[in-house]
Image (cartoon, rainbow, N blue to C red; front, side):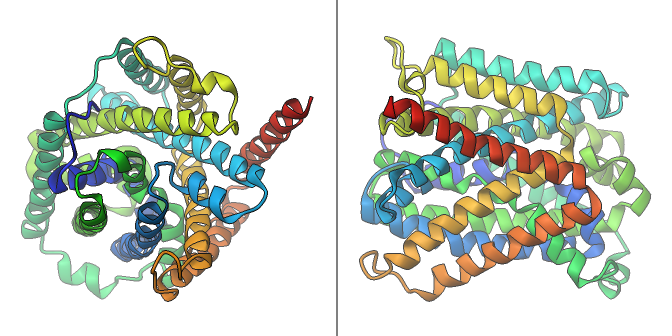
Length: 426
């Protein structure tokens, strides 16, 4: 996204909401409902509360250090071994690769659904790769969305999703039945779902990478970030509740990759189905573009700190990080091509739970100098530490192959940092 002048409060809110809702509600709703059942609303609320508590640490630390970089910068300041920050740098990069893969997966799934193909088809895989390639090409060529377009797009998205949720609740007589069997899969299932779909709230961190572009940052960063998260929570809980009123368990299992469109079709017909498809395509593609743009900034900063290979810091004469875009885009396309929805979602959630735990730890350690209450980062830190083993245990008992894949990616991150460290010593 091209930034023209300073970002005011409404732009900060738009960027925050856009970062979180761009693909989350379209991509992970079915996964969450399959796990939590009618209590999916509770799962999204839990994840939202943990996100809101964690945002407190991001705001306090960013305003204290007065620099971009997010978790990578925070860890640099609180640990004596700078290579620990390097590990988090690599981890954040692969985390955003997972996020872009999630958006691309959702884009492909929604598009093939309207064409009559299943989400596990080769066509879905090809479309996911193509949409990433398109935005890599656009970013390299220097073509970007304008800030005004992004603002308008996000606020239209908010209005559309809340309207669909309201209409869906209004046109249903199942509210009492759903509420009376709210924990139909048990409380533990809804808690597990909150940990699995935590990645749905990823995106608010991108605001810390635009620290220098925010007008009156001491006021607009906290106001904008907290407001954006509250709006995202409202969207997630209303949309998820509406979906429980209109989807059967069989539909959730069969159509989890595009469950929101199926839910809306039940009360608005084919027209509603198409509206959601179009909205999903616009939102997920915008999410890919915004995440690609933000991640290229992050990799440039980490590389200039010599914690990523020098290629990531290269910019052409127009200031475009060509190599970063190509590498990040290629990895995202590969993940979207070979990964399943559950694999990508679980991976993204674990990565950002770890990253957010680190941010909360940093603020807890520095709470006196950041002028923070120690209880907020402590609560958020504990929440992250509880959620991580929940996801791991769930995968161990239900989808061990996914856990092995995720563990392999984490091992690769540590191995890459080790190789890079050894190369620097030579």
